[in-house]
Length: 150
Image (cartoon, rainbow, N blue to C red; front, side):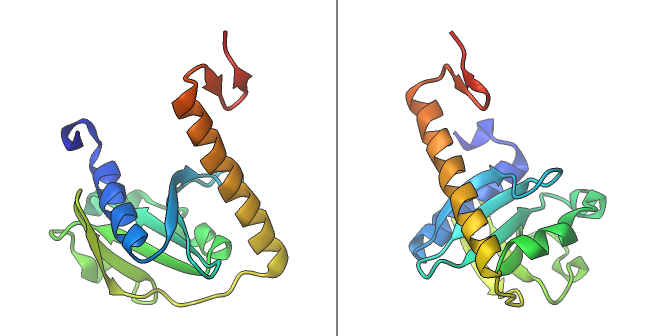
């Protein structure tokens, strides 16, 4: 139920639904490097990676000091906000998505910076492992990031 989700998770749900319609597959809370955790990582039909950071309030955005470190891990970077967010506060060279729990709309495409081949390979492997681990945890709740708990 949507009422069980945190505001950022509600935005992520709508973003993931919209991106699926565009041919992307997504995972949430992927760690591309130590100290970083992206809200939504999307893998497109041509192998492109998009990072989407979900901001549920102005305070949430202002407190985010790491977002620029995410740029080197994707081909495009987006903010996802709700319709009441002051979008003029977001950097103009980044993408903008307006979302709710049921869908989203891309209002502005982020600048494209193609990943290097070695980085793309590492991200593809990280994405696949993250997705597979999530699926395994759904099937077997005893599975953790460290292994199996009895």
